[in-house]
Length: 426
Ligand code: HAM
Image (cartoon, rainbow, N blue to C red; front, top):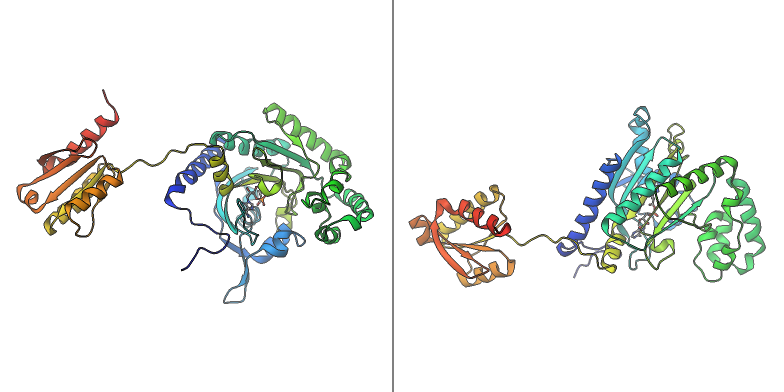
């Protein structure tokens, strides 16, 4: 028997109310902050991601779904949403629009990771990007947007982890001192960290390996090595977060898994969790990315949040989601002429805004009424060939089990009246 590929999942009807709630809240939040939707292709040129995410990152080294198409072009299924949005910003000349350009997306993301709870090979992200302005007020806006989305979903107990990883000017010095510090402790590092020392020094800080955590704790702190401009940027951001009433925790080990970030990086973790493996959202500033992709120098900041992880946390916190109601009406029929009448009545009911399910096949009346009952429909309409002959239908109130025969032509108005009055009792 076929199964969904490892690390992917079907989102079954009973799960959909969670997804609808999150998507609706995300779209509502974006419109309150003036962000507009953008959709980009599911795959892009592989080099777009290699250049932006960075050669030494886990994503580029081991997690991308890359393939050659029939014309030999190398393509990659989107492993994150920011680079495609920047590519679109450059491609469509969005620098000529009023800046910053505020964009958001809901997109499927593909990473060949080791699947476990909250970590999949296909996941879905809601992300937002403010492109074209370096003001730390935008970093605060993006963080606030994420925070308000989570609050609007009813999530509680969240922690905002914040760090600044400096800029092109001050980072080389910091990396030197980090490399120096780690080189002195090389023997005590895990094998991944030994490799990272040469390939991706910053990522040494967020190694989860037991032997490496205390070493990372004692490492030089980026925030202590920032240039004056980065210090000012970070100080202003913190004051804006305070003005917005957003509590944060400074986390000098927070570096993120993508290379395009500079200055602000942040992650939001749910109650009882600390690591980036469990973050429900994260992001930061990426002032060099648009230029790297062929555009003009364009400061930018954004965040992404995993919908599966939000669903997990909504469930964990016992947050109820509005489930779709049962159908209003189930239409049962007996005989061929009655079936035609059932189909046309179902159409009329739907055009009147009522939720109508029409029976199918040629089951007996008992079985159809059982189906009507299990569907939760409030009314069943029963049509036999006799009813068609007489221009009548039988309307059965499923809650009380009473039924009456009414003229076919009155069926829509009769049902609409009864359903509305049941919803709004006097
Ligand atoms: P990211 O931290 O890699 O950032 O992913 C953002 C969020 O997506 C994570 O916090 C997590 O909730 C979810 N996520 C990531 N990987 C998985 C996975 N394998 N399974 C389930 N959920 C996952 C980015 O992708 C950046 N593009 C965010 C950004 C936007 N930075 C600036 N703008």
